[in-house]
Length: 311
Image 1: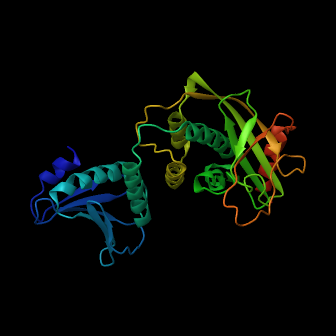
Image 2 (image 1 turned 60 degrees about the horizontal axis):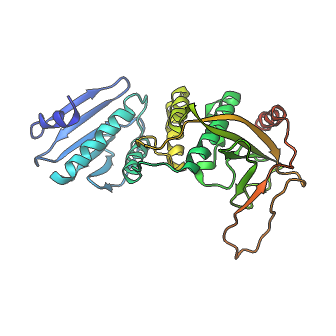
Image 3 (image 1 turned 90 degrees about the horizontal axis):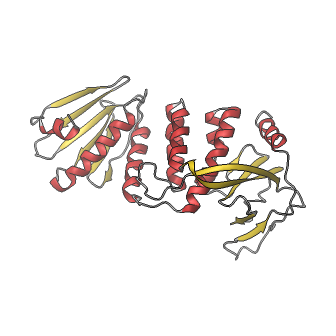
């Protein structure tokens, strides 16, 4: 029986409790035919002023420590409420602790899904995200999922994709033609942001019928993350990047990596534009060729990355 059927069986003033492994959820019925609420017992105190979304309201109450999500009592918005509740229950069912922030973040994911339900994902996002997740996997294996995810700054729209420490950063670039060595730089800071050690990792990707889609790679990494909160953060960062893992895209490419090369962009010999620039210049975008640039020993680069986190 689904949530819609459960709500239909509730009489006025009645409640229904659902038991999960770590927590419980209650459905409540009010006087109006379409006036319902769901409530969670929070694992830690929180006060949220009433927040209004299309189709429902969210609020907490000090006196009982619950978070309530209630419909507006409108038949037209009732379906929105049902859809959102089904999503939340599925998303939070295995959570060991339920905080108000977890519920609000999940609602925001659901809202983003509704706003970005595109059937196509740009090739730029597919190749770019694929490469950044490949590097995330390498970091995760080296020093753990939480620290690796914390270093990933690309989805935050910062200038450098990975900030490993105060002195070391890594920019990620990808080409869909492994023979192409031209990359595009979209800011001064991507290759020159004051880090003592600033590297560029250039992934060479190809379309391959035996390869993975970015959704395949996302799911593989997601299911390998043990900590619930880290999984949530990983999912959220993918959304921020522009990849809606809930959407059914119909143009996902099957991609394989055929290798990568690392470069020292903090070297004076690396071709790049340097600041400072006139503050009236709002954006910079240029292409550069890596054909005549010496690459580094990737094992030595990764050794430097690991050392920088232990300083």
